[in-house]
Length: 335
Ligand code: 2NL
Image 1 (cartoon, helix red, strand yellow):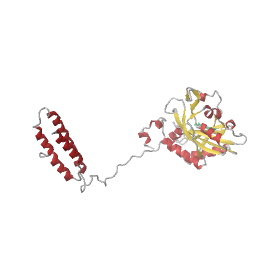
Image 2 (cartoon, helix red, strand yellow):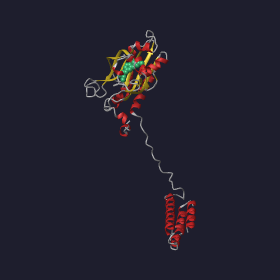
Image 3 (tube, protein in one colour):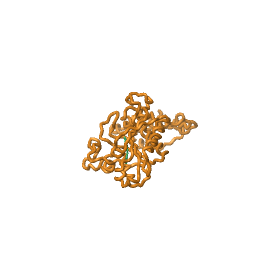
Image 4 (cartoon, protein in one colour):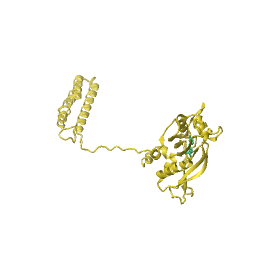
């Protein structure tokens, strides 16, 4: 009896059919009232009591296998035209949802495009840096507060291994290995040991720019940044320069644009001033040129730096910086 069950199982496993009608033949042959599996249940009556348990289980397993196979085959032919595979190849395909570019990447690419048209190329460098490239070569005095543990992430065992707090370190690396003229921008992630809030984050993105040549003036700086502001925020945009201070530029200036929300009349976003700060800039300090081995009597240059998050917030009207880092699709899919 068990041999017979096994033989039927093997027979069933090998069966291949090519149409609905053959599935019906299978059903008749195996599981209809007169089918061979039903016949097994008849024979079961004569099995000895000791064998009943084992044989009964085997017959049930076989029957379930047969039912499964026949149902699956039947479904595969359902709706089939002319006995083919059952697939309707004229059905429209499933649409694949496309992702969107991250708003920070959109703004970064736009800025790279604008400066690209002005002749600036792009350079990148390491996020893990040393004191020289982040601070010393940029004319930060030894006791400058930016070097403080509160502001910079250091590796505990070795304070000469740190996460860059600005991309100026890449500019130092480029100047150390390249002779002027240099006309480049430097996008990248930077890190500061700050509490996370709507306005600040411990990771953010910067783009800095550097132009070094024999005759570069403050007027070149002004005109370059005006052209940049007009392309990024619209032809009607005006800029305003305010005196500022950075250890690595002299003179230094902060650059404002007319408020994108109120157009200059004064609102909550611009604290009623009509102006919004978009970047910091200045003429490269001769001390920095000395550090990278340039002759400060022979070359001049301007540099600038901006936070990409800040620009993106102004462009898109976003009021919480944390949104850029949470990867919430409801936010990301709007760009
Ligand atoms: C800001 C201000 C600035 C620079 C960055 C720079 C780099 C070198 C030499 C001189 Cl190697 N300057 N970069 C200059 C002025 C301002 O960034 O507010 N960034 C978010």
